[in-house]
Structure formats: structure tokens, C-alpha cells
Amino acid sequence: MNNSISIGSSAMLVELSIRSWTGRKLDKSVSAEIDVAKNTKTSVVNANKNLMAGTGVLDKIIKYAANARAWHISQTLPWTDNGSRLLPMSNFMVYKDQLGKMEEGYNALVDKFIDAYPNLITAAAFQLGDLFERTEYPQIHTLKQRFAFGYTFSPVPNAGDFRIDINEEAKAEIIANCNKAYEDRLNNAMRDAWERLQDCLTRMSDRLVVDVVHGADGTPSHEFRVFRDSLVENAKELVDMLQHLNLTKDPMMEQARRDLKHVLDKYDAETLRESFTARTDAKAQVDAILNKMSF
Image: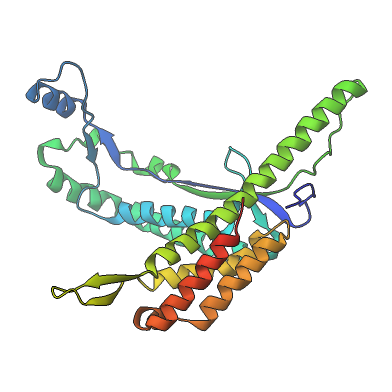
């Protein structure tokens, strides 16, 4: 796999930042009470209260944010430690359109929460009983600042593109270090794509196993392992995404993707659940793809 290429024209960097108020508060007095009750020798308990207990509205926002982050990761590849990820240009418009919809959905949930906030505090007070403390709740005019859905796009720096006024020897060393860092990041990004494929194939191989079980009289029979439709649906989504994530145009990855697509085009989830022939054939093809893979 030759990763010494520049991907500046085939990908860009995107950084997604979603901030949410957790609605959690450490209760030091309750923590201390538990330590005393359990006769601990030092402070070992942190008792956190759910300030929105029993209301559920904030939970929807936090879950929405988690799903948005998971989707973002599925559409991109790792690049830097600070959160920037590689977004293939071939998927840019689809990604940006969906991200915009997610931002609208997130903000709508936040607005709904803010509007209901005074009533939610009253409802939470009933649930919390003696643990309720009104001063622990942010003022409504500052609460919205606890929430944010933001993202930035930026170009991928070109390998070797380094301009600085220092002596040539030092400059060459710095450029070499920068090029190595670039190549390491690209290798890591492509390794992530390979690992997604390997994980998908491994799960399929495991769930498509046909176990041989023996009855009380010793007669053998076949037993199919159970799997959900998501096993096949997730594999199809990955097959589609790998067309974009294969930034280095690795022919081995493309062949593995095509081979898996062939299996998925041939058999649906219901057929794989019910047919011994389909299941064993699909597993054999999946295992063959796995056996060809090397990192």
C-alpha cells in the first residue's frame, strides 16, 4: 500500500464539537454519608445526582449528541489527536447535508428543553425529594450557553509543504519529520478503514457459523446462530462507505469491498437465517476475504 501520496485534493479535515449540559451534580454530603455508613478509611464514594431525574428531555439531547458523534466517526477517518478527522471529498456534499440536518435537530431539542426548563425543575424536585437543591440549577439565561453544535472544515496540509527561514540542514530535518508525521497519520487513517472491514467480516463469520449439536440419542443436527438484520445492514453501509474511505485507492481494499458486496447482493438477512446452503456459502466467502487480508 503506497501512502506517500498527497490526499489534499481528495479529502479535507473536519472537526465536530457538540457540547451538552450533563445535568449531573456531585453531592458531597451524600458521598460522605455513604463513606461513613460503609466504614471506608478514606473518601471513596462520589454520589452524583441526576438534576433532571424523571423528566427524560435532557436525556434525549445527550443521546442525540452521542448518535451524531457516532455517525460523524462512521463517515470519516482519524487524522490528528485534537479531533480533526479526514472527510473524503467524494462524500462531502452528502456529509454536509446530513450534518446540517443533525444540527437543526439538535438545536430544536435544546430549544424545547429550554422552554420547558422551569416546569422540568419542578418535576425533578418531586423526584429528588430531600436531595433537591434549587441553587444547583443554572439560571435559564445562561443555560443555553451549556449547549453547542459546531463544526469546522479545513484543508489537509500537503506533505512536504513547509516554509521557514532557517538553514538548509535544519530545514531538511524538519521537513523529513513533517513528512513522516503525515505518512503516519495517513497510514493510521487507512488502518482504521481496514479494521472496520475486518471487524465487520469477523462478526459476520461468527454469526454465520452452523453449529452441530447432538440430541439425547446422539443424533447430530444443525443449529443456526441467531443474528439481527443489522448484521447485514451494517455490512451494506460499510461497503458503500469504503468507496469513499479508500483514499489511497488501495486495490486490495477495493477487491475486498467488491467481494463482500457480492455476498451481500446475493443473500439477504432472511435467506441467511433460514437457508443452510446460503449460510455456509456466505460464511465460506466471508472467511476467504478475511484470509486474504493482511496489515
